[in-house]
Image (tube, rainbow, N blue to C red; front, side):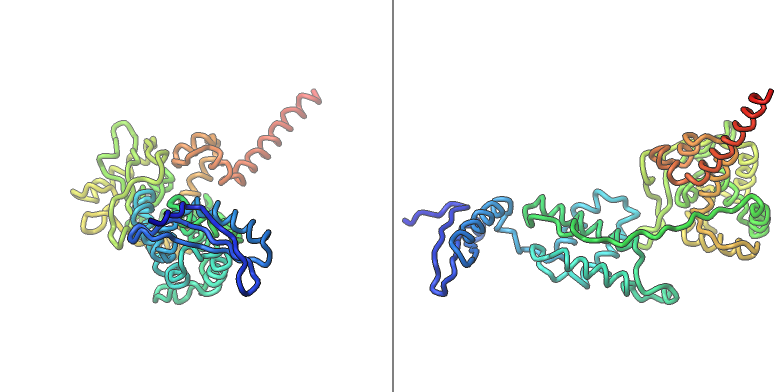
Length: 385
């Protein structure tokens, strides 16, 4: 019986065409038991000897019985079902699936996983930046290309899937690591200045949504957190509010979801005025468990709240801002009025005061200048006395 050649064994020979060939065993087919042979070619024996050595080393890091089994599209499905669905928040599942189905599969899905190169990914990102937006009625007036942030997000999930492929010994390196990614556009933070708050809240009151936006400005909650509030989270007697869930759109459904991070689970104090506003809201919302329910008593769609905000701003003659900018307004006003950065960070549910400091550096820098001027005045008096 012929001896079965061991994995990694190789030999070198000179071919009839004058080139040198190194042939080695890279494993055995699990279905047939047959040896899997691979080869390298070169002009000289020394060149092939070096190539053969590297090839044998690389093959030891791969499961050759599975290499070539997947296309990029097939592997993205495997990664999503077995990794992303467990690792990623449920509220992000639809976004990830959209990236895979709308952008990754149509462009590079048919490429064998082990043949994917950084150049192929670079071409994909260039295409998406120029003309990557999916044609929909609601996006007709928007730019044709995807934003730099979206392209970077797509690269991130491709890179995560490829890292899993490395762990499974399907590929040696991650081609996403070598990609040049677009620079993020700086999105200027907008807030409602103090002089505009009166007009905004007056119009919110006339539109019947005063309570929602007042509580938002008083607490700085994320939109989903605000909509996820239930009366069981509110202690009107002691003046506190517990943030325990968020409302999100997942697979087209408006549902309750876990919060963004462990720091997002927090208890906030309520001012006397905020308590009065919530008491008025309790009388309005009937038997719904939600503090800010939809007309049917269930949770409100996050999109509906944004549209509502834009209508109120338009009627008040104020510039359009995002819902998240109301959260920025809370933080900015708190810092400008002497609340320390650590307290503001805790109220916002940030993972660190450093992150809050970076986000609101413009506010703290202004406060520091004011403090320096104040100290300058104090010392001037002392020095001239």
